[in-house]
Image 1 (cartoon, rainbow, N blue to C red):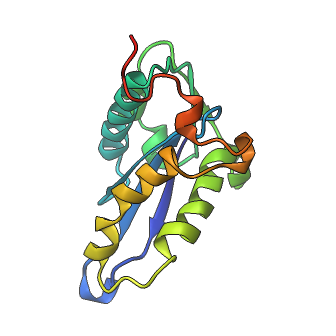
Image 2 (tube, rainbow, N blue to C red):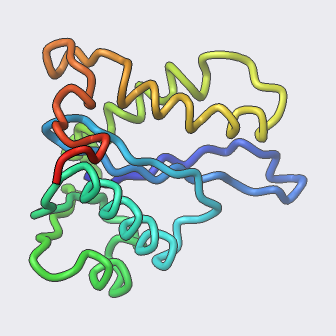
Image 3 (cartoon, rainbow, N blue to C red):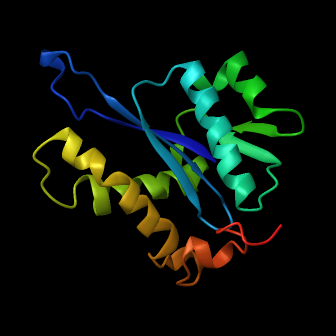
Length: 163
C-alpha cells in the first residue's frame, strides 16, 4: 500500500514550499518504507516505488499488488511502468482514504509519535530524526494490530540473512 502525507512544514510566504512524505506499508507485517521528498510528481512516485520495491525484495517479499490513492502521480504512465509486469495496481475509492487503512494508520502514528511528538526548532532538525523513528517503528515498536509484535518480528528475512 502506498500513500502520501503532505506536510506544510515551511512558511509558504518565504517560498520554501512543502515536504512530502511518501510511504509503502505491507498489509501483513506493517513493515514500512518511507521517504521525505520534495514533490509528488509522477517521476518522483515512480522512482520511490522502485526503491520501495527493492527494499521489500531484500526483505523477502514478492509483490503481487499495490494499492494507492487516486493522486495524479499514481495514475501516470511513469508509475504504471515502474510497477512492472505482474503487479496489480489497485486504487482506493475516491474520497475514501480509509480504504488504504494501513497507510492511513501509519500516518496517524507518524503524526503522533514523530512529527508532533516534540518541538523541533527547524525543519532540518525534524528531518534528521526521521530515519531513526522509522527504524524504531519497524524494529522496536509493538503494534496492537499484529498482536503486540513488531513488523520485524513478522518478516523472517528482514536482515537479509536468508536467501
